[in-house]
Length: 115
Image (cartoon, rainbow, N blue to C red; front, side, top):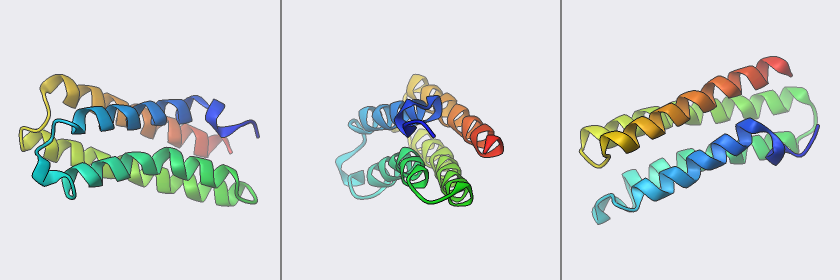
């Protein structure tokens, strides 16, 4: 397998992490160890699981880590909705993050099916 960082899904997931960090900078300070931390952690989990899984022995393990990454995209889905409902996200940021995690989730499914 080629370098995981060269895969489009990894690049997109990394881009999502950067966007999450940017938008959560404006979250209330009291959320630093709550919602901000949880959303950042969940977003980081996607490319981190891809990287870890790609360096494991065998396709079966890689698929398992892709499943973990997909689970994190579901977690982001809820956390982004909650952030929007708490008025921490502007409509533009909400839509951007929503489109990002949906796209990543679809790409993860395709990657898992291709292995």
